[in-house]
Image (cartoon, rainbow, N blue to C red):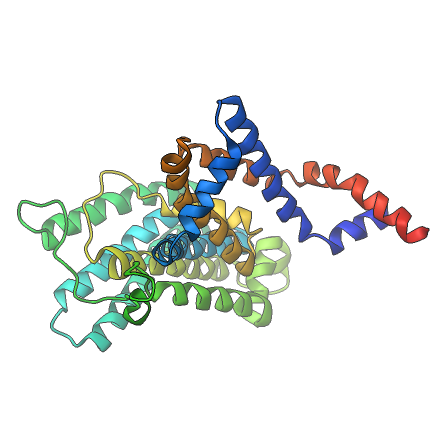
Length: 357
């Protein structure tokens, strides 16, 4: 039994891959039960994503906020917390970037864009830091506070837009002159809305990995996440690490907000409800097993499925909501790894016998 566990540990990268395959199989079964052709549906999905350079660019654009919100949730999780508030932190980041971009529009672009991005990251971090402070100083569960802060962020962002940024007679802010758009690549991708937020997301993943696994501060955060009592006994400041972890987590989410308003829409709307970026980020973090590079790969998969869902609807007359079943099934199999290992078990035994022979 111990040998079998060693084999599974060595080939642990296979488990997520099999979970993805099983998710697609579950989706196919549901489509067949509904009278749809799964082969046509999946073909239409991937044709939608890879059918043209424009679609590839737009799919990358779809993946970008998922990368950053996934990193936000994963960073907090690695530090022992569950950040449900990435959605609110995205909104606060969007609002901060909009305020700086519009109110300081007279500044030259090479100053205005970095200022707007930095403001978005810092404000997202401060917003998440509120939950971290309440956790560290008052012992209040961060799940409760981050959920509540999501709603506060929604109405606060709408208040700022309506009071200071709104175009009279419209339900959105003025146009933001600051832009994260990759103009040199947009033309190559038929004017798809690619922006520098993608590069920021990749850099954030590298920072995540280096900080948590290669620095003393990261080691302390992981130690606090694994066992706060043992970390405190070892002389680590648990409260400070909790606040710092939530602050950094919020920075990632705030940067996602900056990418959306500066790189995609170039204005901020008055939202009727949550945009949902943060909640999708939870799914991406789980799919990526809360590892930064796993999160990037999970965001690519999630963004591909999300963007390609429209192709299923138009190309194969399959309801795009069915893609949520596929995503949900993949998350289920990732979470219930015992099922995946049970499916793989006969293959491992077969391979073991072949080695003996």
